[in-house]
Length: 217
Image (cartoon, rainbow, N blue to C red):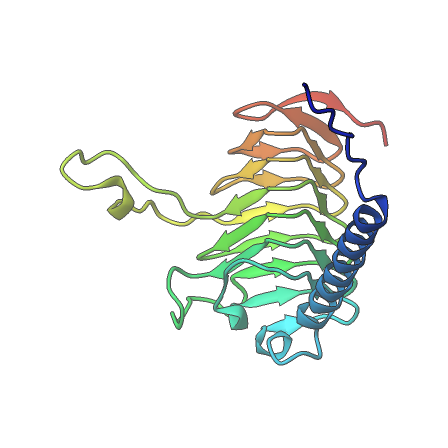
């Protein structure tokens, strides 16, 4: 004779308790992370912030940050926010004595997006009120490749200053290369590569970036 088994219904009380416990644990982790991010952010009055060449009031480098190298040659204005995952570097190796006291200068009221990198060796100047999307990269030095007998990593081209004018916007994934000069109130489209001069009050897109529109002013 076949034996009939009565189907078991899930223990809803236990299931609800587990779900509630997971939610509570998640909230604890979120609160702890938020508190850690606030405590570990770099501001003008923190120990790390005081190592910078200058660090304006109400400015912050959000946690977690990536590499910060030779911050004594980096200057940050007032009211500027640098998003999490940022890299800020002056020179090639920690402890390097740079040629000037202001290798990287970031102006007032700037907003640099998450995962961005500013890597200077000679001079990078980002003006006031410059905003960027995520993962923007700016550098004043590049690698050469002319000598096939030498690894590209060891072929370094001369530094060329980079300037980004006041009030400009650099879209997500923009790359700004040595010698680039971006004017005032300029829009650089997402994933563009800037290699030359972009005049004031223009919109530029592409790789290399080319002016596609003029902004009336």
